[in-house]
Image (cartoon, rainbow, N blue to C red; front, side):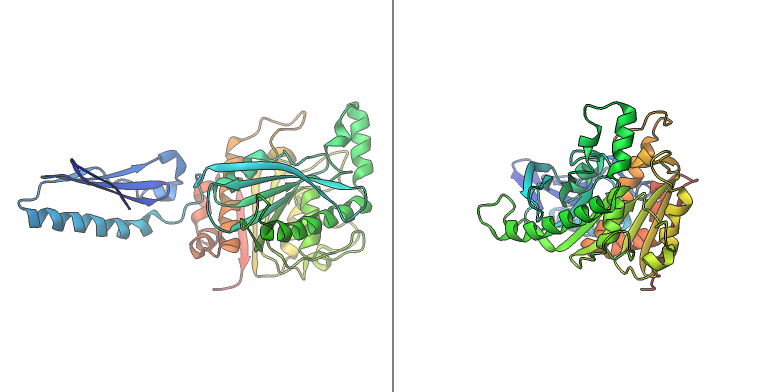
Length: 388
């Protein structure tokens, strides 16, 4: 892209985010420089970012322009070397909207936090369902990251299983209320909340008075959730069972399950064997919630094992607890590993890029060795994908 024509010469910038290649053509010199932020690259990309500044002094006018054309051409050749990289922001966070919509259940309102990136056109959408006792304001790290990668994000808050359970009560009373809220009724209400939001999106995008008019691609929606939120997503993508109503919604094209759950009264295979929606499952080697749930790392991993071959992925973070996927640790947890959040950001982003944007390079990054740069040696990554 030509940025400026100045007396000092022609300045051209070519961007392969987050790398910028700058060429300056003056009366007697061509300068070629690559600018990048090393912290935003994974180790795979870093091996390609060793190009220093070059200065050419052509012997004549023809030679000067020939050298300049050669450099411009070479920049497009080096772009594949940089490869796909899910690390680093691509856009500014344009704006966030805290709103409430009316539920299909009388007297129930659904709080939402909707964030948009500074990007024009229809945006792929990510819905997020919080865990038991959470809110629309939680999980800020992934909300901000996904939005700045070009996604409209909608973080739901589910009345009856949200942060209101923890407000103004003692820790022992809060624990009792959390246990009392983990019910079939609340799971069904959560599923209906998601359906209500999906329906509302269609109204917003066609309403010229809405701040979301022509901003959200309602045919390109993914959904993520943590813990009870992951169970909500499981039902939305077709988990079979009798304790909660299955309500598979074809509008959800991909799913991220943080701390998924196996059913207690049936086999994982009977529950997940017919799920065809692309899924990314994340857990940790210490992902359990004593006194609140009987789920263990092994029962969470059973979900991946039960999924049919196709587009399924699993990440197990070494030494990660249940709260590693949230913004803050639980009492008595070991200090969080900051690399866990960076790995979650990178790998979930690659998954969204692959399945909501059709990015073949992102899918290759997931299936080949790209994930190694984002993980630690003791983390476990696996997939069971159909051959291309």
